[in-house]
Image 1: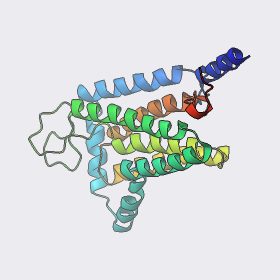
Image 2: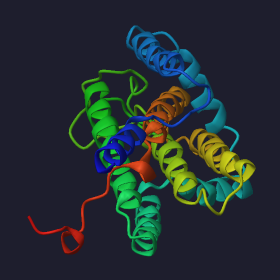
Image 3: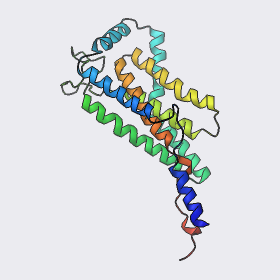
Image 4: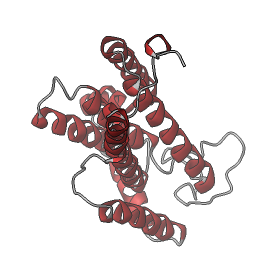
Length: 239
């Protein structure tokens, strides 16, 4: 009987959670879209679009909208989001005597860090506010001190991933509609404000959205609550 229960536990842990759209085809589509977008930018495609959007935004700054965008853009600040999720995870872990909430936060922190920074360093793209004439190009040779971490937008990756983590942590208290809006509204707001503030080129934000969706789907698939728990030494029978 004990072996049967253990086998059921391992089987439940191996069963992946459902995502929407279902299937790995959408994950592959996100990855292919990111590769195509990066290749297009590297060969000069879409650079005129990026520059045109940045120039239009720069010429249509309205002070109240600018201030509101600055405030709303903090929704994508990775530091406070990480701390908030960590606090909720610790509270849930202590309350439920389980480590899975903290494991989810650690996994999200690791995947965003290992995904964002290498891509930024590899593509070496300046921000729209850069005075360099070729700032819009990828794989640039930027001078020392020039901001070169624009592609993809870390704000978008953080927003998609961390609000997805919040939706998973708060699932027992939020309905399906509330969780859906928590996953959709902040990324949409951060996307618009990041472009309007000229913090990133528009394709930076698209690339960040693609990357965040891919990472978020991978994290959502993990059956966190049903993962095997460490045994309590006090409850183990002596050999």
